[in-house]
Image 1 (cartoon, rainbow, N blue to C red):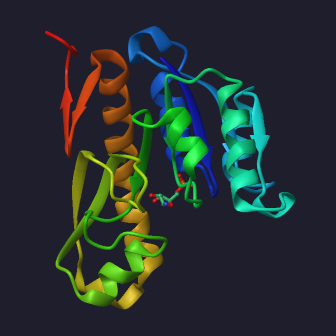
Image 2: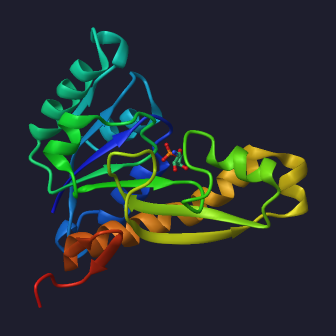
Amino acid sequence: ARLVVLVSGSGTNLQALLDAIGDDPEHYGAQVVAVGADRDGTGGLERAERAGLPTFVCRLGAYASRPEWDAALTAAVAEHRPDLVVSAGFMKIVGKDFLAGFGGRIVNTHPALLPSFPGAHGVRDALAYGVKVTGCTVHFVDDGVDTGPIIAQGVVEVTEEDTAEGEAALHERIKEVERNLLVEAVGRLARDGYRIEGRKVHLGHVGE
Ligand code: GRF
């Protein structure tokens, strides 16, 4: 399967995918064909360039409106003919064109146990709420914010130190689980196929 990965930050989830694929995309069942970002100079773009991958940037500020940005992002991704689009720490909400173009084939990773704590501050919100466990969720993207059908989740205990040390330390611990969860989930979707029925994702050979 052809993957286009979208990033906004340091790109460690992207790196986990690249490391899992290594020099044997056949074995993993997928290969990253391009990496896109919503801003220049991110760690994710650097990691892509280091891997010799095509990259593109669609900055919201470069377009007169959000729909025009969405159309441009859709075109930039479509150029690489993805089977799956992986949003790995991509901090923008995709719009109508993008969902029309890739709906049902966009996988996102979120650093909280959805439906709890959706949005851009899931780690901070969970910590502030005083949860005893949090974690991460890999899900398909639909027209809501972090609301699409869930593919996989991983649990992370919240410790006393987390409460003291704060969000960054807890987020790093979540990311350790998240990177493996994403690599496993994307690999299975790519190798075994899947079917989405309402809110449920059925992994495995479609149509059997
Ligand atoms: C991930 O935890 C992702 O869930 C969140 O931001 C983080 C991105 O990390 N949206 P990286 O850019 O993959 O290192």
